[in-house]
Image (tube, rainbow over all chains, first blue to last red):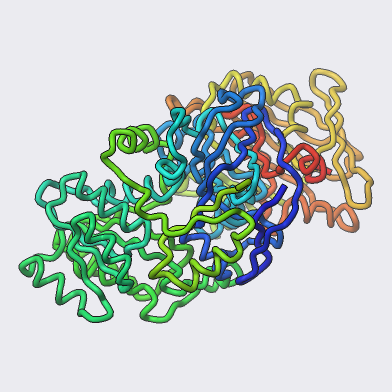
Length: 391
Length: 196
């Protein structure tokens, strides 16, 4: 089959690779009908994520048709499913608590050691996202092997357009969980750093959860424009002093909750150094944690800090004092996708949430390498690329 | 340093002691036979009842499904089993293991018999953890040999001695909780290559 494979920094290709097949009883094989390039795929593209191997198949936002099932799968051939990017067993303690991204059983035992050293515990496995998180082949391919197919994928009703539901795989639940982690109360003002897909979904979600005002911060005019469409006020940090603006816009109080959906790439987080230097620790330039630092400094006393943004290692100059002195609550984590799927699918079907506005480009799988380059080079214009294998 | 047997205000397992030599001596008072000078241990919580896990483990041939490099385990009699472990260059190392203490639903202790390629002893304990299932703790004492086998042991135990026992317990947990051992192999052929 054809698949988008990683070969090094800024080197992704379409290769012919082996077809996947059923390995374990709970597996299913999915014929991919739509898959997206995620902002976090750019971290891989830029070579920031350690434990990648040449030939790895990327892609963790995908959906498709069930074409083969293992003996213990509950899926049926022909069903259309969206697959969560987190591979979770549904049977361990963490899955029982709906903390799916902490699943203990999806990550093969041999792949758990690095995360154990880095984080103290291995996390759940992810599709197409380095060997530290499992080394599973991803969904930017014609077919994918999906483990635990009886507990992860959500079946989509017949006749629903792929583009309406594709983002259930990652960025919609991620934006939703970001807003949930901000513990929004009616009347709140919420500030969101970064108007990428996750930030934009966090804006929508925050309003649905009762926020009175959402202030979105970015420097790409097109992305700020999208945030305004959902009712957000916006700050362009290139032309405005963000902290001062937030103070004046909130009467000196500061936002009740702040959401950092910028992440490591914007800050040049050198995760690839981290593994080699883990024991020696790694230090960053002082400006690289700008978004999270600024968010913590701007947040009102007793407020909430939500951090959906992906961080991989250590940060320098983290304002721990501000966190403590102001009595802030910090909530973060990889998304517990499976937990949010039924509710968010219903919200899409009822028309409460629209995700299709985000898609700026559509292309066949064969053009994925060009897609990566475009997404990387033109972040103002390119908000989301959807790849359609077999078209 | 005070004697290891007298550790005031410290309930930690001996295998986590900073006094490795002392811990190795002291562990032999805890149902583990003296078979070496390297002590390691790890624990996992498995969402299954004690009785299931004990029964699965006590049928030793099962362990080859979760222990990396273990080719097979043959039952010799109720207390003795024969272990065949893959070694570099397509060879194997072997030993007989004897159950030295067996408390149903609680603990199994073993020791290698005389003439073992890798002398080892240890125990696995099963403790009811209520709604969370069962805490399974493995404690292993072994004698790292020299030469080719020494290299195998180094590979088995990776750069940290508890990595191997950690991985084996992780696979045990996967199999018991999900019915399968997690693999990133894309298809059966790749899995065979990984297992080879």
